[in-house]
Image (cartoon, rainbow, N blue to C red; front, side, top):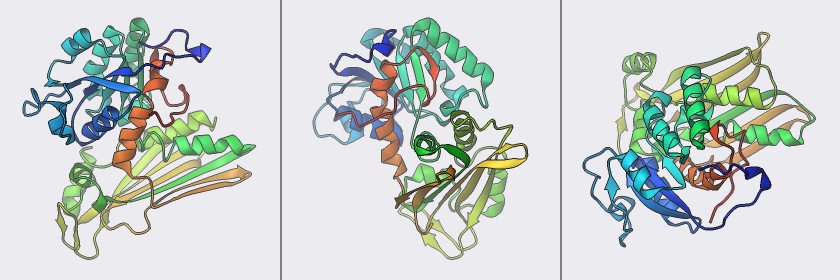
Length: 344
């Protein structure tokens, strides 16, 4: 339960009791890292997959030693029996899909750190749902936070933190280039790698493809820097392979889709003041994360090679647990809690 006296800055150094919910690739990576930390004690795990239920966590995280934690199905029962301090929720990118689990945690008064992308800036696309979760969290004394590497760090939090050395910021431009061929199969599928252009465009139009969270990143920057955005939009287009490309999972013929280019724009008075450019496709050259702040003084940050998303997402979820437990109750954003840092 969130500390009602968090402003005192003090906390108990004993390990936080953590419940892992969702054991897909990101959930497994998050749980594996949590198991290795002295600051956390993984006391339970929940997943809806029958093939995972009843197994020791060790089988899923690749450990040769038993963890003593058996995967179960019923989140509500696990919350009541185990009474964790924090839930590490890695199940879905979309707020409607995590609503019930969040409300269960709120009723139990249990804090949550989630990798759900839409939770980064929850009121942007789901204002009514955000208000419902915020009210439930406040009533139950729980804190709910959505975070990750992108959204949650590279194209939003880093520009916000970089603005600390500026007198004024007039425009933000972020670039993230990711070679999707180095990432897990679900991500390659999410960016449409291997599809025909027609199939890509049909699924993109139905909202079944692409990166989630671009608009949230733009809106978060606008709020944090006081840019008073009056328009937030995005574009998603396929990147077409000019030659055959291969990954450990896929063969992409020339002429098929290698991935996506997803751009986000924040405008004020018709002028673009926030522009974010995500290029995520198999074979992308010069992977990097790059941030430009136009202002006084101008700021330029370059992460050569880019920040590897899968491991970084697991890390930031785990490294945010203490901050969330000490934060005020309610549905919060990364702007409302202290910056995360390495938690041993």
